[in-house]
Image 1: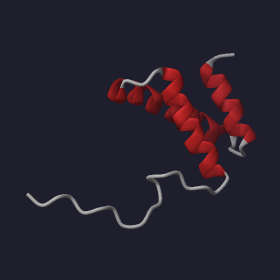
Image 2: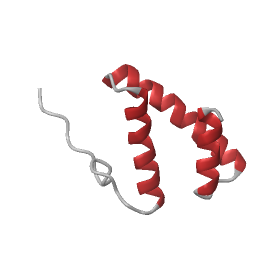
Image 3: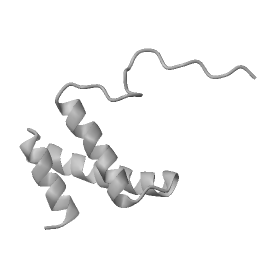
Image 4: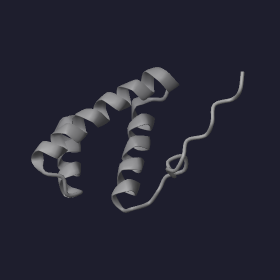
Length: 77
């Protein structure tokens, strides 16, 4: 089973329609690649981080840094 197929199955189990699952799986793969390139994480670390956010969000939990509200003001120059 490919990574994408595994993500499709996971998203479907979390309640996504087939179209939503496909979109979400593709977005997870793309963002995972970005995190690997930007932060130097391993692919496993990046995907673990994203899946943790996904599962927490699905269960209504807010991960640190995603509390919402007004974004902080940029520092004055």
